[in-house]
Length: 152
Image (cartoon, rainbow, N blue to C red; front, side, top):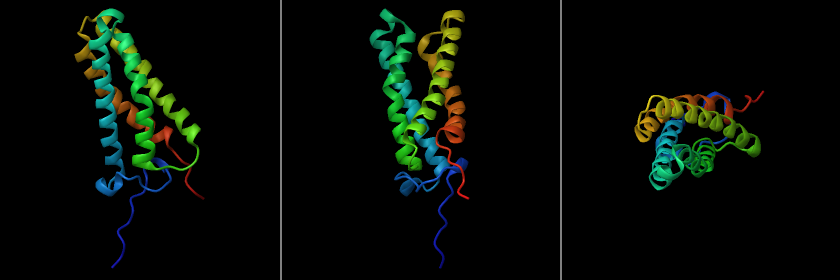
């Protein structure tokens, strides 16, 4: 009887599968699951900050504070639970921030259009913008943040 084949990490990533793989067994699905958790967590942070300070400081402050509360947690979850890549910690972190900050800038831009110009309410607008950014960010993390060159 042969051993079941371990799935290859997506996008040329290297490293042993993370602990989440013991349960999920499919790395792309595990990636999407963690992304969903992080998206939900980030949206939750936005809502908390919007309710706490939104009236006084505006939705932009809620976006910034939500982003700061979520970004390092997201990096750690992807790096250690899903991919368990080795080495290049600071390079991975920098690349993660590039993708994440790009999504952050797009988030603020889209929210500004939705809330300030189209006069939509902040919380439903953020939910829609978050869904769009989750799809875009998936490809950035997969193809850039944690990418490893294939071994020769």
